[in-house]
Length: 204
Length: 165
Image 1 (cartoon, one colour):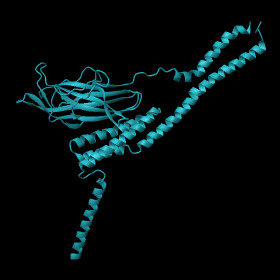
Image 2 (cartoon, chains in turn green, blue; image 1 turned 180 degrees about the horizontal axis):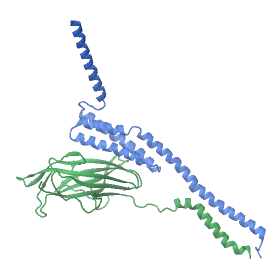
Image 3 (tube, one colour; image 1 turned 90 degrees about the horizontal axis):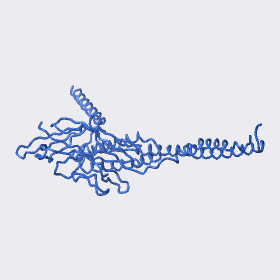
């Protein structure tokens, strides 16, 4: 049997050995590079599902949801969640359209939540809220006094919702805008996404 | 008799003063009296700046590959105090705003040092990881190829053109 006849076997064995020894290096070099960098923002119901959100709200009754942020930006991020409330006629934020053209609501934030999320990390906050409001019979509208958000009493005087005769409801939106800290401008910028809860204020 | 009564009164006053001193020295860390709007705003600004500095340090540690979960939890707590400080300031409760801003800053004492230590450890680990896993395995592969070549040459010399029967 000629030695030359074993050449192929010898080369295959050598090749397999080389691949085995080089596998730690290859596992680092042959990683598919990340091409999409983004942030996820979500709101889930009290069962951690996206199906049973609070809708018909009763005065001073507590409701629970989960607010979450997933960081896929490639770096540790400093987020700011602005909690806001609006009725149907007030300024709404946008999260669709060309990047850069999406705008936050012009309404002032009721409360700010700071969140620090590592790359590929997830941050989630259980939120419990209840509204204190009354019905103004003269003006036929709901007038708010306050919002209790995770044991923080927020002043909502000046907020009101008129009757929506089309949908037969006092429609309001509790929404959460996501802002991100920009190290170059040393300030927060609207991160062009928000989540919102559509609520119907019912009689107490 | 008069001297005894006066002595008793002096003792009473001394006991009262001593007890008041004890009460105030214990509570000094918790009570802030009449903080102005400016003081509260300044405390909030410095708390914000401290948070940004700490965030930069933790971002650097994260980029170096360190496990920053514990640091982020601390930063989150400091951020919570900052939120409450701003909320208190918004409702003109400057004492609370000042207190929360200080609590936010206190949470971050020694934070940057810890973050830098983590960064340093992560950089060292990355260096060893790179040396062993990348340089080591590439060198090992080259060594396997060289050894195979030497073995092949040895076999060729020893057995020439043919092996076995």
